Image 1: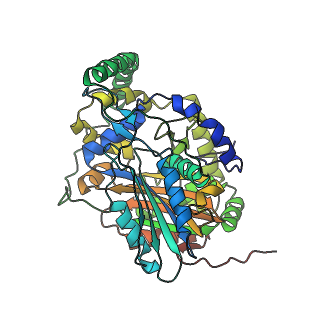
Image 2: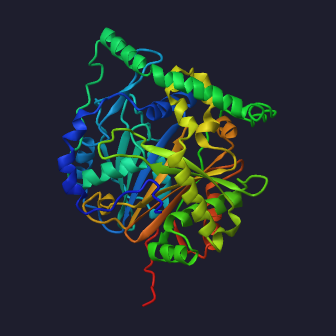
Image 3: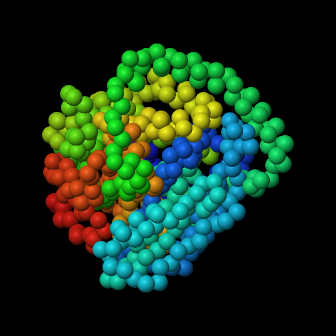
Length: 475
């Protein structure tokens, strides 16, 4: 069985196929999927924003005119939408056309490459809003030693990592693939109330099943939830915090060779890396186990959902991963089989989401982000080559990062911290981006932990965005 987690299929005919798919995408409903509404309402309840950031680095001058064309096609593509709330307090929200297109930011004053991470953080801090716009932002920074870096930051409410890659591929290929969403406020209030009430009526059966599922889960969890004494909130609990991040690059040939030696696959190697990193930072159960939370791609060709993934949880022992991945590979395989055969009951609760008050969302953060013994292991796989060409030519580095802006100590405390790895490969390199928070954690500490974990697997990585050094391979 082949494991695919959020896989981007490499296909050189992709750009040709997209032209024939565009007409199908104009017929979709503009009612938000319940997963997307959950993410949007959760952000509004907590004040924290989930973002995805694409990063490209060129070791030579970038073609600004071509980048302008790329930006123009992004404006006409999948990212060209925003969310309009229902006038009903319990209604389903809808996709509408944006009224304020995002501008391309071209920094005129070069900065040292060593300041690129700081600039990326500045880009991530630019306010984005999936409801009021803009929902994404593209910018380019010239380096004082030559070359340039490019950042594309996108609200997770607009799309997930796979959706961002699809939008980038289409823009790089010159396609304008926007759906003709209705204009904002195009429905008169009484029409909107009537249509949204009908939508709620159509959801009644699903809401009824959700109440049954909620009662069943409550009985199952009775005695295990709420019996423990709540931990006191940390000092300055409402303070906003910046979560530590680190990105490392590994030669793809070396990565695949190591996975083969350990009896695993590229996906299993990432899972092993995630589990060992969780062990290193103390995110383990009493018996030393770790829960791998693995997003699995659920996107179809004509999908308009922002977040078209499901999640698979896998309990693994990280101890043997550095010498043998076969046990972990088998555990992941069985979890995927079980996931297809037995649906996760938590997804049955989604129809209740529009009915929940804001205060309850704050209490549900730990459910959404996992537990204090879990780690997210998300693999994009081999991205389409066009993903790496924002100016029409291959960048020297490409990576994606997951970000949480506006997070508070209290939110992280309730969630038990967070540890998430996002990986993919392009241009002969595998990138691994890590996002983490434990009390007392820092960027330097995370970089060291990630580097040491790579060493555990006898892998050599390049931290950051330095000019790559060619790797000699055995003939």
